Image (cartoon, rainbow, N blue to C red; front, side, top):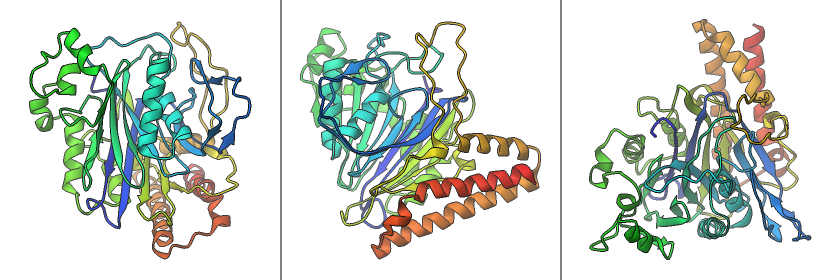
Length: 420
């Protein structure tokens, strides 16, 4: 299942610089899938009789939901990755194992990402939200638009103070708290072994009933629920192993720029190309000092080495992110029915990025000029964000349009390349 991929990373102090938790994810999806960056404000829901429509099913709503910024495949309700106003970040991964994948429509892992962000103000509370919903509604359904593609999910959940790995197989799950001072990554495989800090109450009994565990010795979640040989897990050529090596190579000196470079790394396979490729990327700075803002960078475009990481900070009165919001279409059901014609979901930034890359494909000089300008823009905004964290001064009025303005500046670079 290696081609169907994503990679999510976290680093905690003192593996990082400046008492910050650093979170990052590459969302690797079908090459033509558009990912939008979208903001939803906090909301109060007075009429709890009104059900919440997720991608496929309706569930109970809660009285209040937090403001969230999401990077999501434009056809669905949930999200591949995102953050909320309280500094909680979540990314999910497709995983497979011994348990048959349910194709019955339920909550997608991507729905659970958004629900965790909307309903929890800490990482562990988000874990609680996800496992409670998993127990009540289950997970399942088609995970791609117009393609038959289903999987179970793992999640990396972080906040300013800690991080958790949550891995699932059907309704069963295990959770590992990331060791303080540590680094951790997840990819498209189960990875929790014997360090299990929380678990589904029947998870071990179910493994015994299925003949996956004999009940003797330490329980190894990955060994029981998947076909992975955990003894060689950290010495393989898998992206999980390569990601672990990249994190540990920089351990003690990890910054948000380091995380961006890891997400851009091609030799490791972290930055994917092919039928499945890196369609969007995210990096977050979560300062342990609660007086400092959390800063979330999104590309909103594929190919992180040819994209700009643009910053978003939660402040009051943020308007919708128009240039990274995809056109809205009614989701046709069932999507896997042939022939299925995908609507054009490209938002403005995606369109201009795509056009510019086509224009420079066979022109090395134009390509270098455009990429230099993109890196210059990214460096300028990164330095501005670092200045905010160092000075502890945030211009709220300017920050309202921070992400949107950076998107417009990026579009100008593409427009210049297209027209020249």
